[in-house]
Amino acid sequence: MRRSTARLADGREIIYFDDTPDAPPRTAADTRDLPEQQPRSEIRRDPLTGEWVAMAAHRQTRTYKPPADLCPLCPSTPGRPTEVPESSYDVVVFENRFPSFAATVPMVEPTVFGLPMAARAPGRGRCEVVCFTAEHTTSFGQLPPGRVRTVMDAGADRTEALAALPGIEQVFPFENRGEEIGVTLHHPHGQIYGYPFVTPRTGRMLAVAAEYQAEHGRPVMGDLLAAEQAAGTRVVASSDHWTAFVPPAARWPVEVHVVPHRQVPDLPALTDAERDDFAHLYLDVLRRLDGLYGRPLPYVAGWHQAPVRSGRDLAWLHLEVFSVLRAADKLKYLAGSESGMAVWINDVTPEQIADRLRSAV
Ligand SMILES: [Zn+2]
Image 1 (cartoon, rainbow, N blue to C red):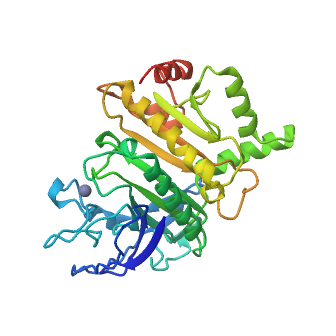
Image 2: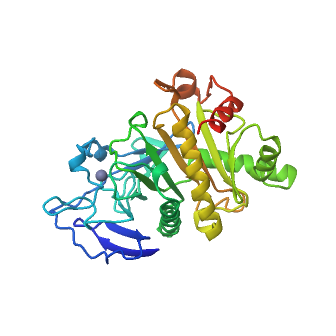
Image 3: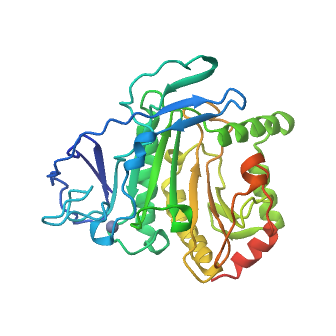
């Protein structure tokens, strides 16, 4: 894999990850006359729940479902420059032009005006876009295993790079796929968020992991993994280094967690063998997801990594994939109980989901 970096016309960083042996040097200049963006996001801490919320009002003007011949993620062609100046690429990562978090966000007052209990801070972090392939009309599940490996390597590279930036506390690589998830660009791509705080879900999982570790002297994920492998009823697929299973208390009508057999905090800690092995297993899982309703499944897939500075000995890297689709043409909505109280009501059991996914190829 060859890594090369450049700058876009407005100063944003772009990084090419090439796995094609004869890939040309990435030297194309961004010829666009692109005004520099001034992201103005801020974060505010809810004084009652203690959770941070980001406000990024400048994102209202972002590109919304452009026609395919105007896709900003396709390579540039003569007379039609895009976000990627090169005429081809394998995997490319660049800073989001409309970020929720950015390093250059101006300072704000430390509390909301008149509310000393409501902390406030600039939304300083980083948001990146990852293009998995130069091909517009394909999907992650159709990538060859070697390309999935390159995406893994890019994710590990970006995790290390973002973790080294001042103020970033957690790095979250994820993919949103499908219009039902709210995807505005159809080109196969993901995103990487560098948050200026530890996310609520990770904070909760680390607290539970700490409690379990104190009581049993072992990591909860390790014990869960061994028990799932022994039970087998919720296991969807497994390989030398990974097991994919439906969690015992699945919240979504389709939900699969892909867990490495070794406790590692994040993507950079995975070995070559674990990365290669993941590519094959994950492609198998994605084939099953698309086979479930006989249509491309809209999904969210996200890497749960240890925070940058805390809980690194407690966390256990894993990927969580879920879908909002409860039938081929029916969406699960986050209604009163889910959105109001964070209490999920699932009308299918995890064992049924696993059973359907095992036979969905
Ligand atoms: Zn495209």
